[in-house]
Image (cartoon, rainbow, N blue to C red; front, side, top):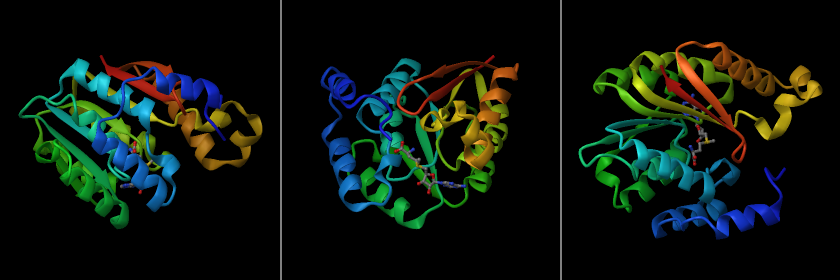
Length: 217
Ligand SMILES: C[S@@+](CC[C@H](N)C(=O)[O-])C[C@H]1O[C@@H](n2cnc3c(N)ncnc32)[C@H](O)[C@@H]1O
């Protein structure tokens, strides 16, 4: 399913800053050589992540769910000179592709790829940094609540957590999908939990597949 009308998508892309060359190459490489290229954030969402990061100018970013490294490279664009981005990936093959492309980028020295299950690696790296300025949640959909709980206490006041795919191709508003599909039900449950959570101020942005923006109060 296309997230939005194809003509509107291409019009928006034509009126959005271009991806840097190394991201364009990664986007193309992923689409021709890697399984499930739809998982990659892509041009518009990538420029959105880049702009958010450049506005915040973070010292520390946590990227949960590297895939081929696209969101990590976009978010890293806004890092302070001494800043670091940790990106977490459980699949060896995706991690290798990501590592190779990160190494070719100008941001390589600021990005640390941590292989393994994110529910474990988050806990290992949480205390390597003073606090997270930005967290991007984009790994296993059924674990979103857990990722949120594992990092919320380590996010600085005013820091930003964002979670991708919270509209799940529109399934979260479809009664049948909510009954039949576990991922849909859990994403809906996550959205409801965040709506009621006093630790954050939230905004569900209907960009691409839906991004839940959560600023720590
Ligand atoms: C949607 S993709 C990430 C896309 C990427 N953030 C981007 O914007 O291009 C989700 C990734 O999370 C990884 N993943 C899923 N569950 C995980 C877990 N528990 N620990 C680590 N990685 C996981 C998958 O292997 C996959 O590569």
